[in-house]
Amino acid sequence: QVQLVESGGGLVQPGGSLRLSCAASGFTLDYYAIGWFRQAPGKGREGISCISSSDGSIYYKDSVTGRFTISRDNAKNTVYLQMNSLKPEDTAIYYCAARGTLCHSAHEAYDHWGQGTQVTVSS
Image 1 (spheres, one colour):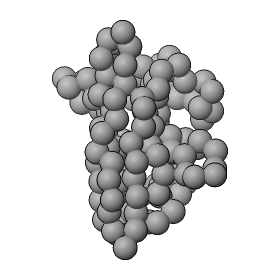
Image 2: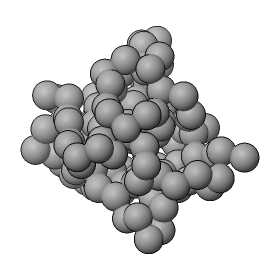
Image 3: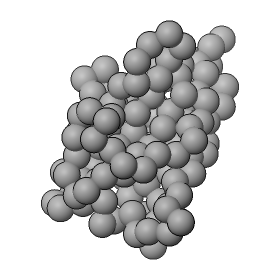
Image 4: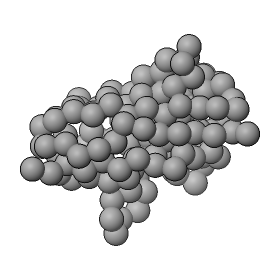
């Protein structure tokens, strides 16, 4: 059974860091494009980063560029999202998702989703 499980969320002060993990079971992550999305209360789901399978291309939403880093560990079948210099506006539920081999900006294009992990940035 295909399954994605996120972990690593929590409460952090502004300026702090968290590393989210997206672990896969039932399939090999490096054959897929993996996107990170987030959804804040009362807002839609937005894509914030993606790493493709075909050529390893990486994409970031402008608001996280320079602060967030996406990476793969194929041996662990896991994708990470390192989040630094966190801001209160980064507060949201963070999801990872898998699709084909190429990244896509629309969440509807992704086939497999994790359950999400809560990130709260507050003093």
